[in-house]
Image 1 (cartoon, helix red, strand yellow):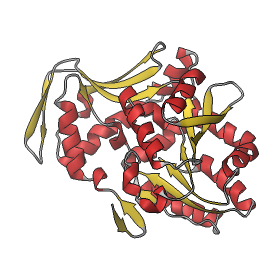
Image 2 (image 1 turned 30 degrees about the vertical axis):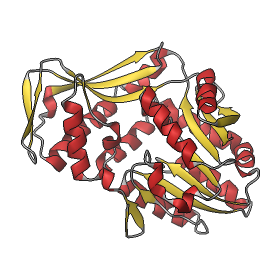
Image 3 (image 1 turned 90 degrees about the vertical axis):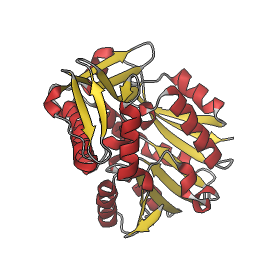
Length: 328
C-alpha cells in the first residue's frame, strides 16, 4: 500500500488488477466477474440508492439493531478494552457505525477508528462526515481491498482490536472464500480481540427476491454499471443493451445469485490487451453472491476459525444478526 493525501491506496484496486481479474473470470466456464469491482465511485453511489429502497431490508434491519441495542453492543465491545483500534472492513457511508462511535466517545474511551473501503470517494465522504459530526474522533481511513488483512502491517496486528464487518458483506463470498477470509481474520487477531460480523438470516424467499430484483431497476443498473466501468477503465466494448439482469435464490444453500445474461451471440474485445471473449446467446455471467445464514451455521463458522460467540444481536423480526465473537 502507498499513502496518498492521508489515505492508503492498495494496488489491488488498480487498472492492471481489474483487467487481469476480468480476463480470468470471463475466460472461465462458467463465466463470472469479481464482485469487489462493483464499487467504483458510480457503483458506490448506486449502492447507496439500493440501500434506501423499501425492499432492501438489510440496511434498515441492521440500523434497527444498532439504534435499539447500541448501549449493550458498546458494553460488550468495550469489556476488557481500555485502548484499542476499531477497524471497520467495507465501511461505506458509516450510517450504522456513527451510532456506535458516538456511544464510545461519550464514555471517554481512548481508541482509533480505521475505516477500510475499496472506494476512495466513499472514504473521503466518510472522513468529511465524521470530521464534522465527531471532531474529537481519531480517524485513519484506508482505501483498499479489505480481504487482504496481512497488508495492514504490525501497527494494527499487534494492537488490541475490534474488527467490524457489517452489512452482510460476508455473504458475498463463496464457501471457500468465507473459509479463507475467516482464517485470515483469525490469524490477524490476537487472543481477546473481538469481531462483529453482520449476517443476513434466512427468511421468506419472496422477501429476499424483492430485495435483490427490485421493481425500480436500481439493482439492474448497479450490475450494468460494472460493464460500463470495464468500458471506461480497460477499454472493453460491451453494449449494455445486449445483457439482461437475472436473479435466483436457492433456499437450501441460502445463496442469492445475480447474473447478467447475454441475449445474443457476441464477441467482446478488451481494448488494452486485445483479448477477445466470446459469449453464446443466453450465456450467463455470475456477478454476485449473497448468502443467507442461520444461527447454527454462524456458530460453526466461529468455532471452526478459533472464535467464541459472545452474543447474537438480532432485529425484532429475526431477519438480520450482528454476531459478536472473541478470539480464543
